[in-house]
Length: 268
Image (cartoon, rainbow, N blue to C red; front, side):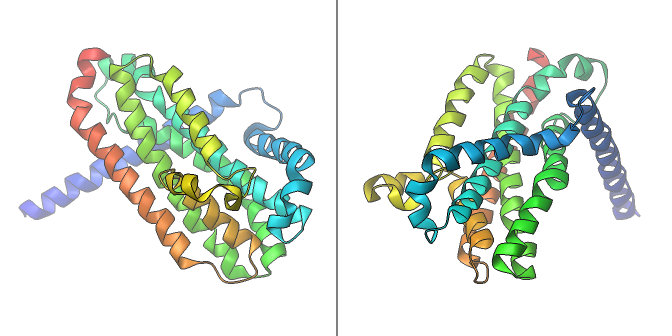
């Protein structure tokens, strides 16, 4: 009987969390795109424009690393850009989510973690309806394999795990350090520059390349490119590496958020 009551309580809490998350995600999207003509598809516009710019500047130089194909370089640059854009947008928005809802938390008892998660959720929705379908079509045309199309889910899942873990971490840190957004802009820039977005990883000197392994986005980008550009089956070692780094970062972020959460209300 006691076990049954515990299960019922857990189920009610999970349902309440999901309903609250749904409301917050919808609110975030409405506020973000109120009066917008393209709505969530603006998230696709930026990487397309940047892909065209990188192709015009670096396409001829780096095409040799992608089978002497400008089209392959276009796909490689696009995949790198959608990863860094998702990461940058979702974590930067999650950073201020707890502090930004401090007045609400002081009035109503709510699970604090739902605010950074809702920011990640809004970006997941954007990606799912805007970028992912285009990426799936490009993969199907290039690889001619439905297996590769379905495999796109795994590096995307790894990206969600990494972004959620970092989102938990920075949203908690921002409660204590209000200068964090300025420092985090620099961190995102370093991650962007150290990720093989507009350049192939092969051009990085070996002595520097080993340090790029600490960049959590690198295995995600490499896995996504292998699935999208390759005519072979998805490389499971790349997928597992991306997922493992995602799980580790999520566990680290959630642990820090959970340990510091009891101090939030005194500072909000």
